[in-house]
Length: 290
Image (cartoon, rainbow, N blue to C red):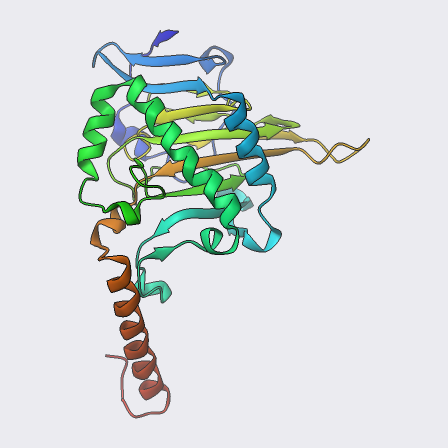
């Protein structure tokens, strides 16, 4: 079903919301079922909210529920909230964190069976995006064309990387580290109330039903998770409630990656040089850090 929504807030005004917690949206702003959100002023689909095939949903459920406790990280957010997440796919160099080479993520290395499900699902999601709007899919393909297949989460994938968020109430944000391209966000959930996705520029909220995926340009559109108002406690043989959002995106940092072999070799060289430099500073061989 096509749903027309005009922009009600400028991108500049939406930027002022970044970092703030998301309020409970008004009842009339919610989108509950399969929908294509069309901006009549642009004449384009700007958001899609679609169910996934049942087999894909159950494969994703198995994958996210199988991620071991040691693979999750926890980050403090505004308002004292803590968000658990883990990345998948590929990761760029980040020298400030002593990550000296482009690489596969820890999840890919330590839980390859789980990672294979997440990575292969990117191909299905890419096909769905091409059906939503072939022009968007082609534009995004050209946007990330310089990234070699070995740095995509699967050969031919629209995306390089992803993150799984576990029952996390994320504040308003834009995905600034990503290419200016569409993302895909399947949701797997049970026993959780709230936790929709609010997009303030169009004043709409998507319920993020179990087994549905949201497609939109998270680099451009501010978005955040609505309050999670209840999580089922484990009882009567039922597990604790959960809400997993699985976000697929293309990281801009991946465009600077050399071949996998060159990254491995260059990363080792950069690490050695950095460790020598650190040792010289600590032992007093060098007077300053430069």
